[in-house]
Length: 153
Image (cartoon, rainbow, N blue to C red; front, side, top):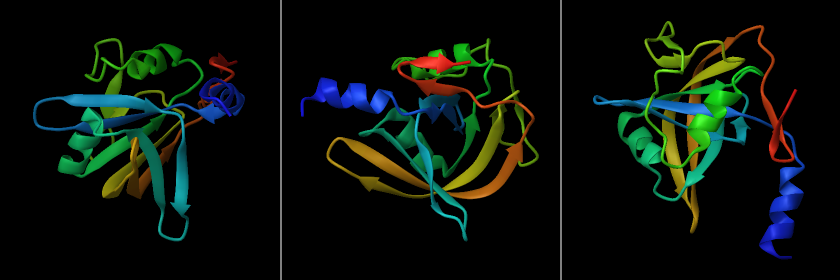
């Protein structure tokens, strides 16, 4: 199978859109991930994939925690901003606040997971980050879905 057919097939799957936010001493940075999945329900654990040696991943491994903000339907602009490869820094058009743990979160997200870094599984072209979930905040906002290369209403 060629890569174009493979990408086209995968694009038909509906995925929630999440932004991983990491804060270090100098800055707040983030990026989108289209697949966050549970690896353990009894001891809440999730995983997501980042590009090999990503800037965000390197900061995450050093600082040890992040928030995973599942965007709501009215946050397409935030998803577009953080899906651009050269945009990782927090921008003024993203409304953010701090949760009860003092972590940075995106306001009006559908739900937010607070997680600590457990380990990274290094593959030839990407890295899988495993995170232990320590808290979850659920809102009434409907989650933003991406399917067939566009946001679903």
